[in-house]
Length: 344
Image (cartoon, rainbow, N blue to C red; front, side, top):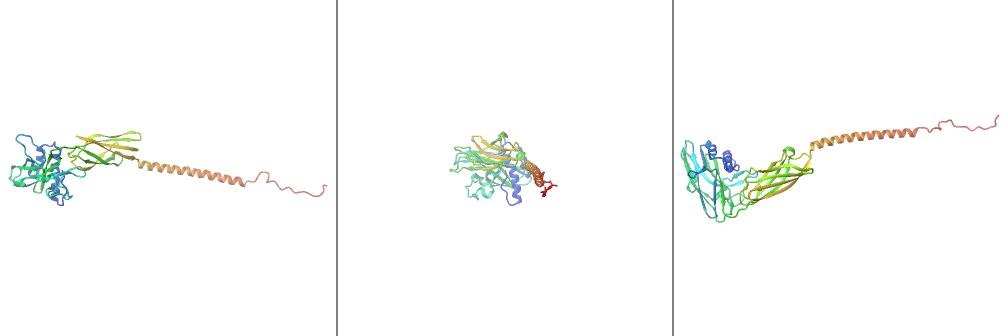
């Protein structure tokens, strides 16, 4: 999961490494060996400590009623030939505007947030005297920590992460944290619009998690045009984990968009335990390139027709003028003179 960008190059490197590690944890299907191999490139790893013969865990899962203290353990492994000093902290997890998972930086984890919001689950973590841990070469250290759920904490999911930092590098381990009580799965889809045309058309929309549990949404697209149903998109899982109270802006490819049509779109989003959410939009598809060429052709044809009409009209006018100037038959005879006098 990417960490919000920081001014320094070192923090940017931390962001990239932390993103890779947290995405592995978010997927839940990555093996501990894969995560360890990725982190081992820097000489040390951080992961949930295994309980006896239990299989490795890709993330922490902690749950309990408000007002209780939860416990777990983090394993730090130094695979290098020199001592490592690792600093530990808890952090809130959230969705970026594009739907990716991210964690808040250290200066917002325990001391509040710049937006004035109440500190989140990241401030509930405590590592006691082990906030800074020195791990000898070729050694594995197990660090216990606690999560204290405030008595007034709301029921539902409180996404968080354990962040380990050493030598300018950060590793994040997901913590799925749930406070006991009533849960509500609810979402809405808003701001639907169509961008692009043809095979490059995409449907833009916004998803809002209005419940108190994380959601794994699925989306289906149905389209009705002037000539009947238009190919849409069957339901498919979206590559996003929508956290409680979060809003994300996404786009859905629509390769079946028509070339020429007036279409009504219906987006339906579902998630386990939540009622389906729908939103509609209209889109008009006009192939402007073809229309421009057709318009130019019609204008040219109209010009030819007009020229022909003007030519015919001119010929008729000249013919009428000629007819008006011709002498009338009989008027070309010599004038008759009256004769006087007696005949001989």
